[in-house]
Image (cartoon, rainbow over all chains, first blue to last red; front, side, top):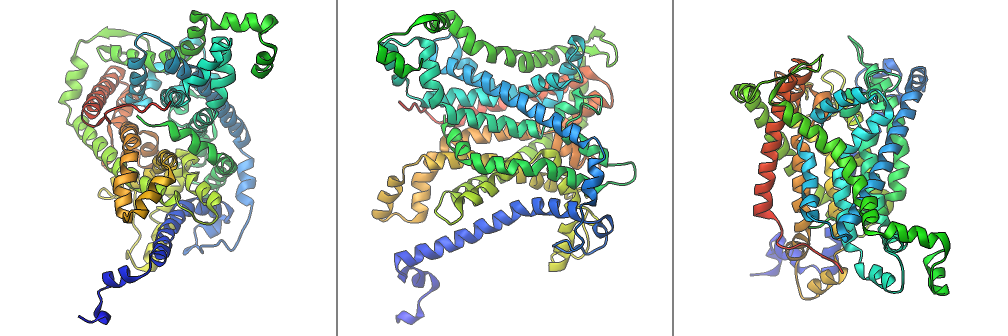
Length: 290
Length: 315
């Protein structure tokens, strides 16, 4: 059999290893690029739509790069309560992140280190907290929140929204503290540190990546919270921006430009957040193993 | 006084010592660490759950707080309703479809991102972005892009000739469920990517090098190094994503509101309607109790069959 009658496979394996690796990498980069386009295009189209004029929006076909760029939609969006809703969203996110991170860090440490009866059972049962549909958690919350007077208030929603962030965060911190070597704390105890000091000055700094991961996880949920605020916030001055988007849908028409402009305002600032914290996101979630 | 200073001086001084000593008492320390988490968990997770479990045995007035004992009547009504069973079936389809799509593409994306390439920091950041795009924003963007008269997806697909006329992606009975699954996976896949990527980074590069040197092909390395290392995280990711997608409400509610002709009415949409359109809180509570029992049962089976044999302790 002569060598020039080689099948593609034979040809491929006759290439030097380094060259094969190079082609592999090109192929994988191509797949990754396609993935990135699929991820970016909806975001791009959201921004592009927000910059189109109302007439341009509905004159087909839309050019892929808007030709008649205008800030008109943003101006009309700013005439509504959008900044108020924006402020409420920031307040809600800050509250949920704070409450979740503090409770999960302390609780995770306690579950990992202290000798508490049934703690292992409890740590596993935590995740069962997700098995109840959140939309139905909100009904008892609505009734009870009304009785104790925190209905239609942002602090009330912050507490309620924590139901969706705390179980996983607590579980994550419990796992994370297990990857922080206990021996450091033991050494500190031996040379005379108190238990609290060992926690505060040794375990806590080592757990920072986990805490940041929890903060980001709860931020992502709180920033886009929809279900629970829908039920618990009844007056539109208390709305968060995700609910406010609905005010741009009217009986007969949907103000797509305005919705996209408000969405852009909600999404773009968080990009910086992901860019600078990605290292911590990955480091913090590294502890998730069973 | 920092730890280093205290150690240098040989002992702790003053009120800080008293404070730390007080905080270190066993019961104070337990109260400080576990109790806040337990209290919040009890208040926002356990309490509403127990309320709903209890309410499922009552006829609950929607407008006045009157509870009339109903026994298992609510359950009988729900279980006899074919709409309920149809909604459970749709939840299973939605959850299973989403989990398969999210776990495969999410893991693939993580593996693609865990290589050497240029502009790594920027590209990784781009890949992580959908994770923080709010569900409501995603839903509206998807509705706009898939719009039957103006949607850019339709425009592009017609232009390249894949379809001949515009399609109502969320308004066609055959397509709605698939469209909702794909749309929600755009966002939730990234959760899988983050967790898997984090795990991949903790696999020492030396293992891969050793395998390459001893002649393992790419496929061998994937099968014998990557996959076994991912087993633990994939176990928990499948569980979490499965439960979360099964109970998913907001994205379906905005995209289709259960339509067209109920083809996307999953169990949580069904429960929502029972509670907020029919104002039948007792029956809605019975629906959620049944969902809960179903998921807990499924989770126990899942743990029993698939749990990785031992817990990893890094010391």
